[in-house]
Image (cartoon, rainbow over all chains, first blue to last red; front, side):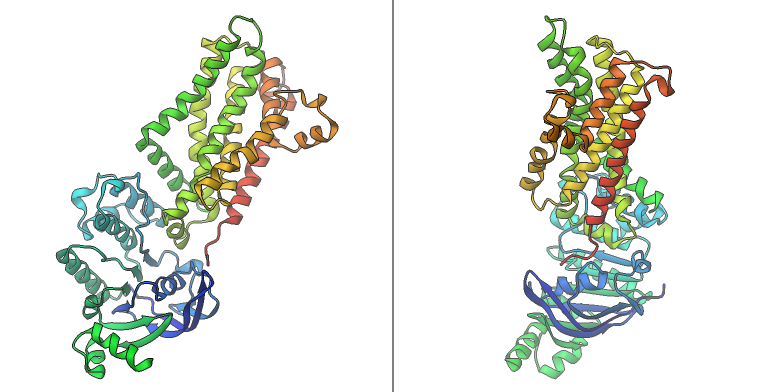
Length: 237
Length: 250
């Protein structure tokens, strides 16, 4: 596994007539868990869609592993989890994962491995529409893990999950990062920030901070990432 | 295009249908019920079913498949799976072609049942070979699938999607020669009917039902010409449908 670093320069995105991303520049290094934190509607999803190459970009550049984002040769090297689970309601967990495994051309053994990785082995034969919201988002995550992609782009993958499971998934993200994968996770829950190696704080389409959690707390003198966020917003405005 | 992805999509669509017992049953049973109703209407008169049966064998698979597929791209889009598939190495034609293969297979079973019922149970008189009726019916169903997939790319809501039925299908039914022979229509309408694919589908079906020929497949050469037009429309619709899919959206 080589990992794919992401480099974003002066990115502008307009969605629904609104500036969703307004001049953002940063890099996501390989072998780390980088967190994108910010309130709902701050532009996290637009930013992630740019990295995956499904978003129309207004201005700026996005490159993944030195190649422009969205290039054909990147399409089987990026695992992407959208905010709403992108799976087929009327298929079972296993049928869903097997279908995407065929599309990606990865070995059939990957299906069982990825279902186990998100702790859904007991629900393999259950139809997706009968699953809970958290289980459904884990099916979506299992699909993103297929074939051990070099870059994982995860849009709020742990929302609404049981704390134990949330801890396990963050453990998985770190194991993948340790193995060289680039992991880019978004969340609007500030308490997840401490689980990241590096943090990007975002608000109203702009980047507020880019630092390791400990450094962020130190530089702002705040007790928690939430307080740090507020401190920064107050100083900016 | 990738054969692997094409057949993965086709297999997945068939698996979805297998889970949806009601849709699967309706796809297979409804055409038979409609044909039986038609036969019953004309039962005592001794005419009519032989004239209307063949065009309906062309119309029903076309309409059913158009309706079913006109919501498919919409479903893929609203479930987010379209975005996921297009972020993966899926080609646009892999996706639409996979749908066409899956629904083409369903149409083959549907048409075989309808033809079997019409010919052997309801006593439809067929001059040409019976298997050719099935071939024409499958071509019509694939046409319906392709047109449905094409228009479904333009629908943003289910309400819009179902409106394509009166917009695209009903004019073709009116002008296909079922109500008035196409040659007897006002010249302008005849010209319009000449560029609508369903006209060729119905022509092919009627020719197989009313004539036999020592030619290829036991049918007149015009049937193969009509089939080629139907297939051409299907291929062009699929290509246009694929062209309207966008990997990047705003």
